[in-house]
Length: 370
Image (cartoon, rainbow, N blue to C red; front, side, top):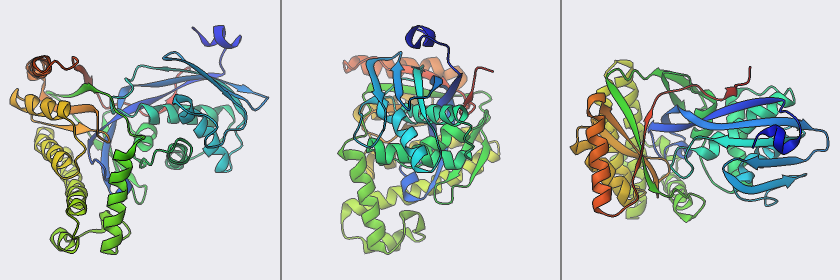
């Protein structure tokens, strides 16, 4: 159905925000560290119109449930709609006078694949409401507002990376983001002869549970025991590990510190034009996420192993973990071989057939009806 058919009038505008793939830098964002995401061509589109009654009415072409709320407060609404309504609440909490709106949401980004469909929804709604009510918010600040919606309204303790990627990325580049300072830089991501292949493992990705939150809590505990604001501040890994008695905290710390180093190394390679050499860093990141941070899952491990055996330069799980997608850096002529190898391995285990997407670094959130 169209906006006109649902609401009896045309929208005031149409806005779109992309999903993201984090090339490298996983679970570093909430540790004040470095991340290197890029925006996908796929994302979430929001058609919207102002309302004078202060009501937020939401419809989605991908969900049967509808939502209507007048005074959004945490706990007043749940499900997918909470991510959208939470943005209005967060904008108001930041002092920005946004009123009600009728919203129709459409998406070509698979939910549950670890490609940040929730942040894409938040950011599409954020830019829509800002335009509808002539609110001017710098993009880094808007990312913080969208993050707060997810943290405090939805109850998911995510870092700032996903919202920043959706709002700040540019075509043909990855975004080097310092999650402590908020400073960012565009890093060329020239894929000549290479393909970034996203493999949706079809293992459902759910983070509003104990797994993600417990990892974050462990990192905060380790930093507290080390007397540091965050694990970003560890400069001597060996000394830090010797001071942590809990083996779990040692493993979590080792991943975060070495992952920050991998981000810095990847940026250097990209700026030097040595994109293929980033593959080894991707695989090292996956092994650390699997063994030290313990957030990988069987389908991801098989996808990484089979991709590398079939000719990928490297591969790793992406997202928070516990389900979602893998990214593989593959010479373009070997993509069919990688797809076949992963699909055959899944079929032999009677797992759902994986889905594949060739990812291209794309533009961030914007109005699209002009």
